[in-house]
Amino acid sequence: MPKVLVIYYSRSGNTEAMAQLIAKAIEEEDVETACKKVEDASIDELLDVDGLVVGSPTYYGTMAAEIKKFLEDSVKYHGKLDGKVGAAFSSAGVTGHETTVISILEALLIHGMIVQGDPRGHHYGATSLGKPSSEQDAQVCKRFGQRVAQLVKRVIGQEG
Ligand SMILES: Cc1cc2nc3c(=O)[nH]c(=O)nc-3n(C[C@H](O)[C@H](O)[C@H](O)COP(=O)(O)O)c2cc1C
Image (tube, rainbow, N blue to C red; front, side):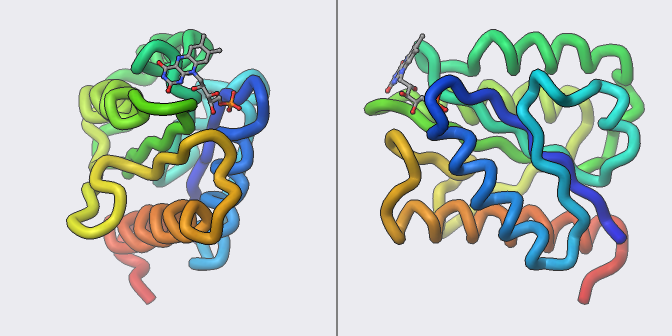
């Protein structure tokens, strides 16, 4: 079964709520999913998964230091993550969420990961203002998770 790791940092629960919605949507596509706070995740887990989804609150228009540290530590496996699927999401207070998502994607692309945009939904990755409390926010997370799962299955050749 394909495997995806969702890691996130969240101080006040908003990014965590997104992570849970996204992980549920991935699981519903029959993809094994682990959803962890970045503090509880190990770099070594990256070798075991087909896709990595990274979530951060928007801090000054970019990712939180905790996520940056995880990505810097991932240099341990530089070259080994080539061809896995990568994706990113963010919660902001007002704005800056898209630059935050892009900042994470830059690192995932440097790892050689495959990143899919979205021509109709949130182009770069799921974003939310504050907690994803509306039905529309939930749909954004669900669509994002579904698309990540479907891409993982295509990449590893287990399309249903
Ligand atoms: C240090 C810090 C920097 C922040 N910078 C921004 C920002 O640049 N733009 C913005 O809209 N919100 C900013 N915020 C608000 C958070 O992005 C927002 O509250 C987010 O939903 C928090 O997510 P969390 O509940 O997962 O921690 C900042 C918050 C903190 C603590």
